[in-house]
Image (tube, rainbow, N blue to C red; front, side, top):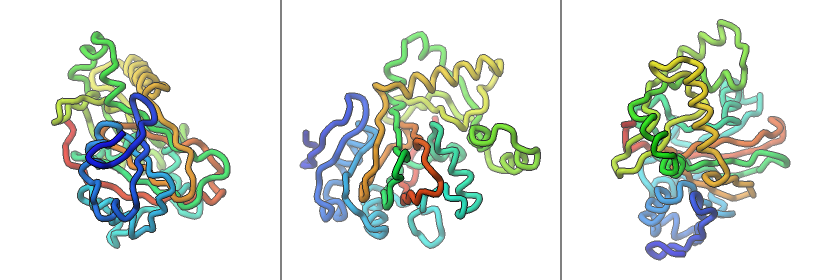
Length: 274
């Protein structure tokens, strides 16, 4: 298939595409418009063994929108759960569970680009699901039931997945991070809608806690079923770009000491939750 001169292959009917382009053209931004359009349509874009250097990864990210650096030096972010990385690695363990990034920002990041330097010898795959497609396929009565519902998202929700019996002091440290109350259904400017769910969800406003828990788990299972999901097994040099506003993702378990090494860059958000 082709879009504006960019060749690609769909991975599954509801999610994913493998892009076929020369690195030089990607770095020039020659396909930037087509990539942006495909990102919205396909949710997850794979660039197999493109072998971006860190500088090239940042440069490519800039061709697609505003680069949102995590660090003052503008470098890409190393993604690791190696205990040697300290508290950041501990928080990163929550990535074993379905989530999206930037729940605490009024305008969440548009997308992330993850590049593989060293894959895990076992495990360490990244799974994605398309929350646009999942919403669109919901029964009409379920869509109506979700109208107007809002959920509270917090770091504590994610960390309780990793450490279900924290000390009070640990809980207090988690509660020091900003939390947000967000719609369960994001009504995008494009007219499309997506589910806003994931492991950061701690409750649904105005709903009995057990009923809210039941709904959150039902929606997670619905959104992450096989037809809406794609699992990427990493090779050295692979890059994967995903739409953070219309997907969830998680990593499959791997040995924290195995040397898995990934680099992430992000595209700044362009649209607030609504």
